[in-house]
Length: 206
Image 1 (cartoon, helix red, strand yellow):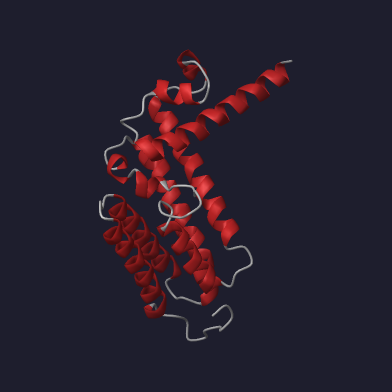
Image 2 (tube, helix red, strand yellow):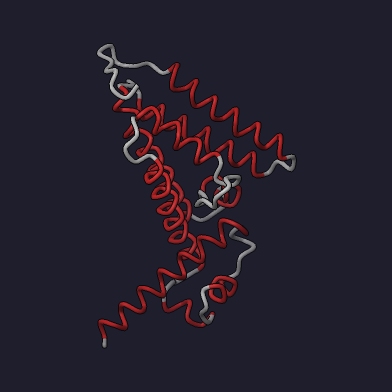
């Protein structure tokens, strides 16, 4: 019975986090009350503090859940691809997370950027961990293409992607928003073409 109760509690906590991640990414942190999340999860507001100490803790853990979902989506999309193609496809999917025909996970970095800048250290730490994971994901493919500064190149690509989605999301004209995304994809290609590679460049994956 105790084991079942713990399993139920873990499942309830997981449901709260998934619901919170979805609502925060669509409505924003400040505009979302704890009651909004608990109601959407089919729970009472009074049960919140059995799982979390504060809204800040919920935001931080919900962001981690959001990052897990977008990483899983990207990695599934590039399974078995050559490194260069994988990088380009990850960039394309990230850039069109708000405009794709099928619903895709949203990234906390580009959808909550203005609020994250003013958040407390707990939330900022969760955001930076997500950013670091993105850099490592891209770097894991770039190293296979023999780029000398593969980490720096990964950081540049992530910065372009996050900035482009942030800007496109606040652009009212659909054509202008799409132009931002298209130009960001071109910028990623230019970064890949212009970055220095090892003299012993392997052609594998190109």
